[in-house]
Image 1 (cartoon, one colour):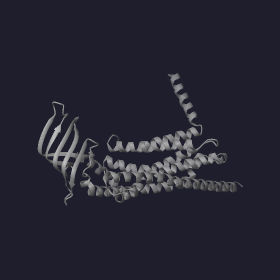
Image 2 (image 1 turned 135 degrees about the vertical axis):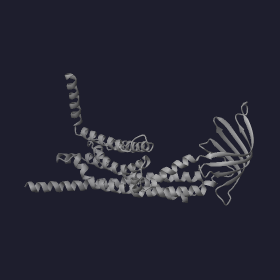
Image 3 (image 1 turned 90 degrees about the vertical axis):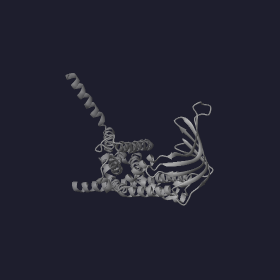
Image 4 (image 1 turned 180 degrees about the vertical axis):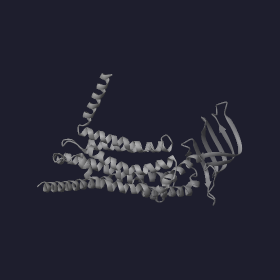
Length: 391
């Protein structure tokens, strides 16, 4: 008799598990579609803006959308699964199904176990993406950006238009431009330049100029010829006027470009290369790749607890809290990654402390949901009260 009851209970658990996995899976794919559509639209708008800003044909930048989508898939999957679990569990409580399951002795721990097949598959898929597909997409994106930059780097000064450089610190105008066969240079005529040098306005007029890149520093300069430079306010006695035959003016610093190249190379490297490489930047990138699938496992347990609600309650509260926690979790990982890259924290601490905080939050929420937190707090208060009285 007991054996039959045990078999029935196991079969019941199996059907409940399949029911929960089916609900989570349906909601999971629905959330992927919605969030993916939003992210795709955002990527398309950004690419169009970049195309207009650089004067590059949008067809040449369209592959960037695909590479960016591959890069964002782990984040989309993590958020989608987290929200799907919250919605699926809250639906159980909304329909009073969870109350029946609770009466059979099935609680949060059982729900967490029931959905693990879906969670584990998603985790393995995200792990595969973060250690192989995402680095490849970042590398291909960097190659495409560098190729596009190389094609248009020496033709971005437009004829007859005022243009800004260094965040508006330099305003440049050329009436005529021409690019010779050697695209390492660009020639211009009738030049007007306004710049702000240490709070003093600077105006430069030149008959011709040549734009070139320093091979050592990678900085972009304008070599002005046969011109005059006015510095200071015209009514000020400290104003200065200088005529020159040749004058070099830096318009783009090579330091920023050098830093970007270092980081893009790290992001595009294979995981095996990162394992054999020392340094905080490599450690930060490696821990970031492992953190994304790890966060899925942690958030799956937290999602079950956030989905727990009364039949009269709504789903929106748990869903809203889940979105806030996910944003804080992800931003915390990014901040820890940046701190590790800058050497502000040790590699053994790295990004792991952020995961530990979320695990502690999950444990506290579990204890609170089951009324054990007040018991623990009461014991702590009694212990300190007793120690104080003994002292």
